[in-house]
Length: 116
Image (cartoon, rainbow, N blue to C red; front, side, top):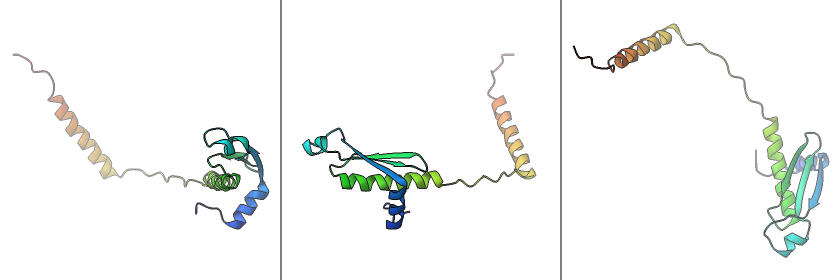
């Protein structure tokens, strides 16, 4: 999926979302601190909330918020394919047991040396 949502997708998101603007705190100077450039989007059907306060421009923050919302919705709608359970073959099980026996024999040799 591209970083920017398509125009039709963006229009659908705008219809389904509630947009609020707020005064964004932090560095950025007088323009940012005095104007409501922060954007908060609430996607009503899913309840997902995203904010954007990085830029001093309200329009740039609005674009960033819609991009974020599109990414979050895509991640929420992604379904993982279930794992297909498999069993090791009889030969693989026998080889694994043989390797364990070899390792056990080597470890048994690490024991203390007894004086006789």
